[in-house]
Amino acid sequence: MKPLVLSLIANLIAIAALSAAPQQTFTGVITDSMCANGDHSQMRMGSTDAECTLACVDAHGAAYVLYDGKEAYTLSDQRTPERFAGQKVRVVGALDAKTKTIQVDSIAAVK
Image (cartoon, rainbow, N blue to C red; front, side, top):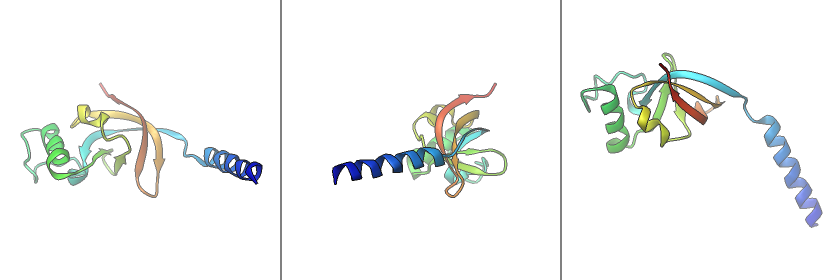
């Protein structure tokens, strides 16, 4: 019975690896889910976009998102984006189109 279970688990892992979403590069601004389109004028939680983003995440439980000018994508990594709040960045990761979530591999500022 154990070999059968182990074989089944190995097959499921192989299938999951093959069906994993491919890596993509996304460019946009790190903002928050309350101001997902990057417009912080309504919230007035700080004098800059970065301050508002940080306040919305810290005080209101918002999540960090990447806004590319059309869509907002939730980021699986909710720690790294803090240092890029309000900045244009390049995110490398795999997109889950159903949930609009990027499984983040890396985030870097765009110069």
